[in-house]
Length: 193
Image (tube, rainbow, N blue to C red; front, side, top):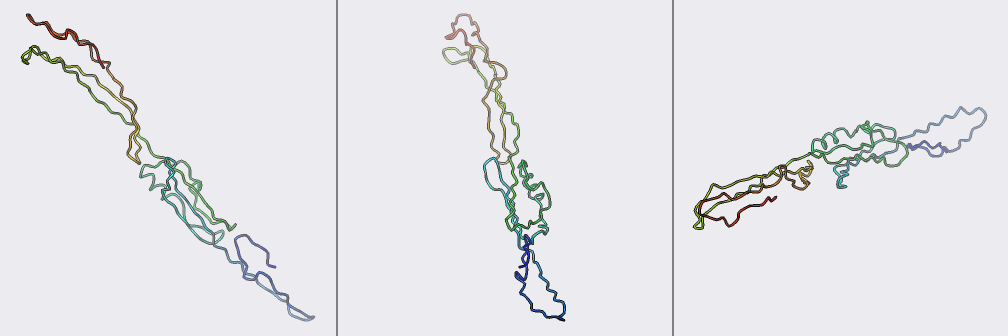
């Protein structure tokens, strides 16, 4: 029987016996081993949601070069705001094994995140009017500014926001102006947020 060589198939599995007699010439037999077809599979996975982003499958001879690396696909995904977490190929040029089993590699990504800020002013306007609706005194206007922080997922363009918080306290207490001969229906506007 021809010896087993991982990843290769002999053209003659069993060399048939040859009957020789004294004076027969030397007998030479040649067994040729052909490389078996091997498979490499590479899966590119989004760890944020579990989706498969891309894949590649290569076939070739045992111990041969696959002429493939993950570099180009990683570069393309990074341009779409994916962040490389782990490349099981280590970025190497891949080579086919000789064990007859598919070689499977995973390349994992997460989403690039960006800190985001948002601001919003809230105004309080107090109108001072006579009973007939005409202006009794200039309006009093106060502003409280609110801000919030968030993180924007640059792949999905979705922002997760924190709660709004005031950046300059609350509206101050305001006493209504005194106008001779008139009494305001509200003497003091108390602080509010």
